[in-house]
Length: 72
Image (cartoon, rainbow, N blue to C red; front, side):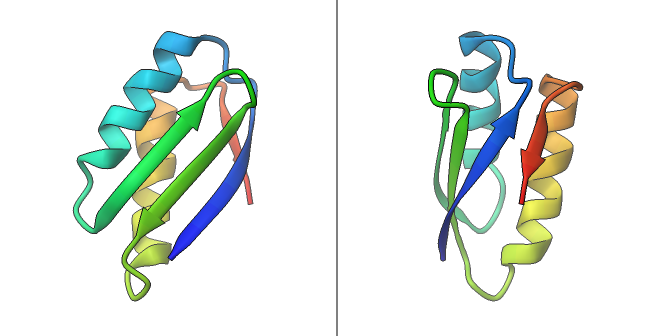
């Protein structure tokens, strides 16, 4: 399943790159992209585990950029 999300308060391109790398390493994730310019994130992951994976994505993003919010 591939979904796009809007990001709020992502402050720098370096943080976006760190978030993208960390999300890609999560089990069940096929691909991910985080764009600082558009403030958007795309996650392509296993359908059956998507909700659990998104919880991990939120945790990863909070560690890299505590002020950044993922708008569902």
